[in-house]
Length: 203
Image (tube, one colour):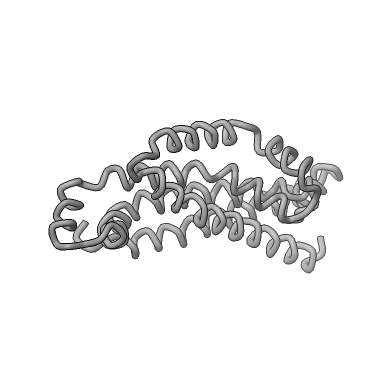
């Protein structure tokens, strides 16, 4: 197995995991904030139910659906991964914001905070630990699912695993699977550090 090829696949897997996770964060957290505002209960239920159905699909099936509309390539994989892992972040954002003590919010209003200031200085800081827990779940999902990227021309360590299966080479299968697992654990470890660092002091 060529080291250059393995290095390329490793970089592709990291890229897929990072890009899809950042996309999830950019979409799910603002959506979670939006649906917890007054007047959006139906939208909240619709999004959670719809994304729940998407997550219930087999990962391969979701990638194939995106492939049928967008064709092969890394963009197809990133969007499929992001769709599959949106729910944990959206759900945890909603739960985190809704569990903030209303008396604390009222105290902020009493201090003259605007709605935006209440969100940025009270609600999000108090819910950040729950939100990051959802992000950690999404990251592990994305890195693990990236092994399927090769099916639609997305590259990644799945190529090594697939080659090992086709050629009946157990070492290749083991190397690919172990590297994917190590990447998932590494991403989760970094997320755990962020969770600890961003947690408000005194909580």
